[in-house]
Every structure is written in C-alpha cells, then in structure tokens.
Length: 300
View (cartoon, rainbow, N blue to C red):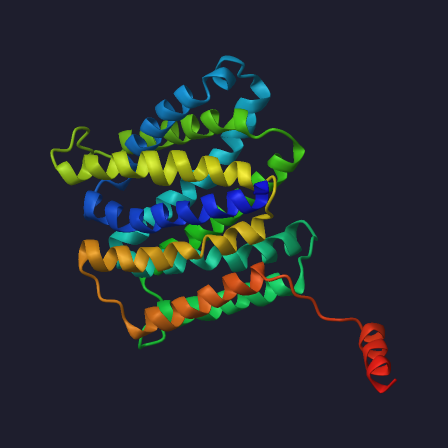
C-alpha cells in the first residue's frame, strides 16, 4: 500500500475521532471552563507525544521550537473558538460548520500566496459550502453565535493547515510536533489562569473522560497523523477529507447526546460527502484537440 493511500485511511479514522470529540467535549465542559479543558487536553497530549517521540525531544533545537510555536498559535485559536462554538450550538451543527475550512484554504492561498488550485478542488469546495449553508442557516436566514465562533475558528484552522503544508514540504515536521503541543498547553494555561472563576480540579467524571479521549485520540493521534500526511497530501485535499468529521459528528451527537438528525443535516451532509468524492476522483476535462481527435476517429 502506497503511503498516500495509507495516510488517507488513517486520516478518515482520525475524522471519526474528531467527530466523536464534539459530543464528548460538549458533555465534558457543559457551559463552562473551555480553556481549562483545552489546557489539560494539550498537556496530556504533550506528555504522551514526548514519550512517543523521545528521540526527537532529546535533539530539540531552536528552529524546531520556533516552528512549533508558530504552528501552535493558529491551532490554539482555531480549537478554542470551535470549543466556544460548541457551548452555543449543537455538537452536530458545530462539527458541520467547522468544515467551512475546505472553502477557506483555496481562497486564502489565492489571495495571500497568489497560488491557485485545480478546478475540481474549487468545485468540491463550493459544493461543500452549499452543504454548510443548508445546515447552518436558520429559518430566519441568520447565523447563530455558535456558528460565528466556529466559522472564525475554521479560518484560524485553515491558516494552520496551510502553514503545516509549507513546513512539511520544507523538511521533516516530526521534530516540531512536541514543541507545538507544548506551546498550546502553555498558552491555554495562561489564558485559563487569567479567568477568576477557574476551578483547577473539576469533580465531574465526564470532564476527565473527555480529557483522556480528546488528548489521546483527537489531539495526539489525529494532529500527528495529519501533520505527517501533508507531506503526501495537499492542504486542500486534507481539508476535504476532514469533511468526514461532521458526518461522524452528527451520528455521535445522536447516540451520545440524543440530538436529532434533521433533514437539513442529511441534505447538507450529502453535499459535503459529494464534495469529498469530487476532490478524490481522478477526472479531468479533455482538451479541445483531444475531443476533435476522438470525433475524427469515430468518423473514420
């Protein structure tokens, strides 16, 4: 099995973990302490990854630390804003709206880096955008507070994915993984420390179960796999693969939180799944000379 196919499968498995994590996070934090939850999540992930990548930790240099710190900033902002979004809307809707990253990446690349992408990626991105519109716009044609938090978080996450693609193409990105999560833990600790109402040792069992699940599976596993995968798969394609996440998220929210799977979720989810297929199918529009040659062949 070639590496690209292997990482494609591992990424899809990771999107299942991410989809489940929306419900687990909502159950764990309720309406409070999202920063504390993120601090423990990043701290545990850093400890686990330090053990796994110990040989890289022993050889840490200033360049890896600087790169990891630069990656951590948009990642923390993205995850924090999406965590806030969960406290203001349903877990299933939040997971779908988070998928707007797929549209933002080619737009950001075009505007900032003057780098265009293929027609099928644009087609996939806007098909996904229509799906997200179906899901997130309410009956009064307004976007809720939770959706706004999630959309801004998706923008930060798009910046993070573009940076990851750039760094992974420039060299080995594995040495930056532990510094990145270590920086995330430090930033969320400092932000939580500035909150007067922070209860550092919550008593709810669901809080700690959520920490363990999110730290091990949706943080340590998924971000490590996705960072390495971008050496073989572009940021646009990775973001479209991530659109499996809301599908898993909707079903997880139904079974864990009892949220209803609405017709809008099904319609929007179908469009998002179609976008994934469009991005991954090997198709191209034949050139005019090729079409004329084919027609001449048939006439002969």
